[in-house]
Image 1: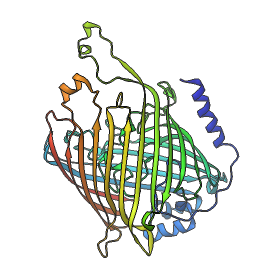
Image 2: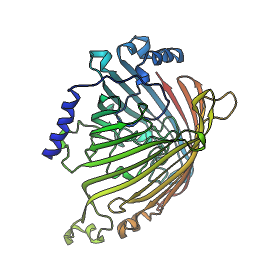
Image 3: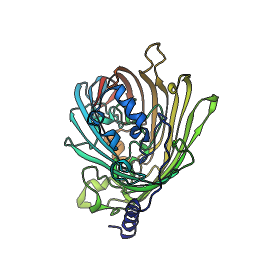
Image 4: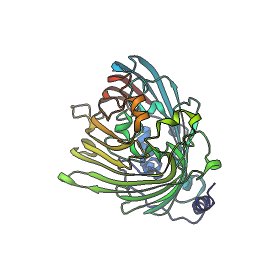
Length: 439
């Protein structure tokens, strides 16, 4: 275990138990929040009333919301398949359960500014993520919390302490997939797009695993966190199914710096985000000598220390409901550039439109059309080129989500993917239905 970094991590935990500053009440904005920032509207009296109007939840039914305890649960089910092409044409059924407990420690134990989030999740059934032949899972939610795990996993235990209304520190086990906020293309693949490439930026995933121990701070000039600067220190190895303390910083460290600004192009709300990810973890270098496949020759595997990624992300409203500034539709985009070795994903871009349905009477429905392109490294080497016959990957996804009730959404989804792995795979047409039920 890296002692200096472990000591620094412990200092952050001690600060969480130190002095605090009351946090000013915030007006509600239906916007994405950075990792560690709680949605304070959830805990407010107005928020509790709205939740009761929308439909009784477990928290409101038990009278817990007013005490600072909010429990959100949902189950998302998929019937998705490769209708044509890919590696194998098949339709499979599966699902994912997500259970989140949010605690406002001011209301609960009188600890001002302290919030705790715990997330347990599991998946069940089968999926076609491998059947497409693509690098990007066509349903990222069906790969969470871990690719080969179906048991219930405590994937997030995150403490957030506000030291002022503009500054907070965070520490704990955090999920990374929600760290790339975008108004029209984000989340966990259960509400908007399903394909990983349109849910989050996939390029830094070699350095940023799904769930691992994290500490850092967030500063904002806007109490609604539409504009902020975030700095995180993360363990570079995945510890989704463990506490992570036994291997904390054993293989190095990952640093992430991210800034987000609110814009008003065309007189409408939008955001611009720029982030840098760096790790000193040691990887296997790309382009290995083919002779490593024959151990008797004694050719060592060449290591490559360190990796970096620069990311950009934007969203921009084009049409806004005059009666509700959080309802409308617009366009979005992402881009990234990496070192290209050891990271096999050298560059990436995505673009699309999405938001609330423009169909009269269906304003609660949502839709999206998105395109992505992943440029692979030119240093993959003869082994990968021979075994996989790789090429750049591109895909398109279209979805429409009908809000059947306040707690039940039904989504039709179609994807066309030209997979990166050409050996044994052709252009895949993926179709499916997604049903999300909240409790």
